[in-house]
Image 1 (cartoon, rainbow, N blue to C red):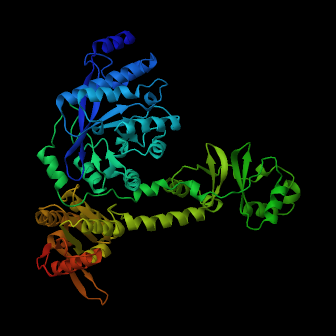
Image 2: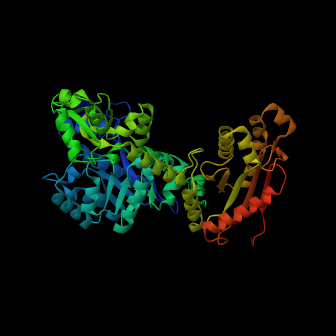
Length: 585
């Protein structure tokens, strides 16, 4: 049935072409179009995936692909579209024994299209190729005037090798790595690495699948040459030749996009494998005497895992065995018995891919002796080695120290390292912005009187209020530490947002006090000298500095100027905003 339908489509040329614009990410102009194909709208072969699936199943791939090329080329010429045409070609079509390499060129000349305007876009569809033959075919097409692009880089079986072997003029970054890039540091690093390779190899990168303004601006800031996606324009029978004005304004807008922050993600990427120690195991048939000899011969050996046919079943700890043998007649009675007699039959066993965060939670929930005994690490249930509680605690502590530099553990807002990195990006791009230092007044007496948990609630409240009144696509909120925050506003209405923050905090903070203290506007307590001191309700001081291009050269200068503005704000009673308007300061 589907074969009959496919033959009808070929016989009656019931294929239609769509075109999706590809733009220059820096200037915003349309540089060309990808030609796409659709079957009849009322047919199960409407989608190209189904169309080519049926074609492959019935040995009609060559006929279908040649028909698709003709339809796309004819329509491109008929519409007289500007720029280049990205023409999808399967690599295996180039490798056909009787591939008609000259047919496409002849047809292009017949239509009056300059071959230099046509990009052969290789769409990967199988795990391996004869690269020598493919390279020869590509050189043949280049000799006819065509350029080469590789589609869906990072998605398929061998796209990186295709890039290395064919040295294309364009590479298209698969949409998986583009969509949600503003929320995923790993995707950001992948695309950044591709751009670095592209720059070194003289290749132009095209980001596919851009669906939001945030993705568009972040891709632009990474220096990716070209972009394509629904946010720019959908595939259409009559595509636009120019960008909509609002899209052009977005690309032309100054400032920098907000990069996704690492910290919590990296925390979960470190696994038990990092703690793996090679510890020789013993079989359950080994005697207690033999295990005791192992301990005697190796003073550093503290734990012996018991493994039965590759599967761990228990642990024997040096102190447990030596304590047992120290008892009168115990060695005589138990020495020749199997070592399972004194083993711990319920050790902590974890897979090598368990995150250290999850493993630490398991260890905390387990009995105390497991921390000293350590844990068994497995791969698919098979014994790999051991990990110690000491190594786990050391690694977790180091991770927390490192993570705190990147993200504050209380508010999960970016810490000092990403704050400084973002300021440097703003300066390098000569972007105008406002640096706003945020500090809590009278926080320490509150924290002393109400306890650190209530103090943490107030700090988290401050972070939420800042986030609620900042533009998530343009404004960067950092948590320096303690009750100090720094907001880097790119929003034009940043001063209004600051005043909204002050008002929101003033309205929310009284609810964190007892009724009596709230009614009195504060509370009294004794200071270190025994004197009674009245402490007003916590207030918020914001000190802001407008940063124009060329005014500052480093994040140190900006932090210093913002801190000085904050000191001026703290001189104003109650919740306050001070804006430094002197240009020389």
